[in-house]
Picture 1 (cartoon, rainbow, N blue to C red):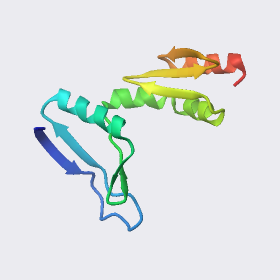
Picture 2: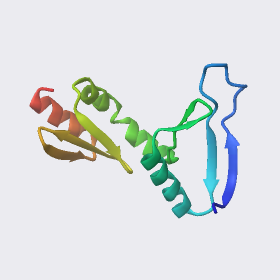
Picture 3: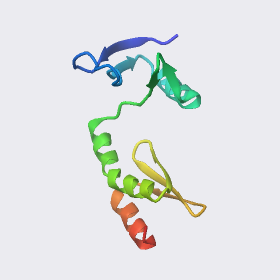
Length: 119
């Protein structure tokens, strides 16, 4: 059984009908419970509850969020060219292109690689 330390909704009014429900933040006592929930959510995806798709995300520090945000434009470029990629924890872009896997820890390195290939 999970031990929830704190749980609350993101501030805001009642959701508009047809719009997604508000985000709920849950702080668990044990990090291994969080890891297990995230792993099971990936395995069981998509998860549907009363017609709403449930999504589970880890909460990152502001510093990590800012670093991850640096890859936003690069991810858009890769997606527009239908190139397989993922952003791995904490801040590492993984790109699969022509059967090879590339890892980038800095957005500029990824951008240089993309431009070198002419993508």
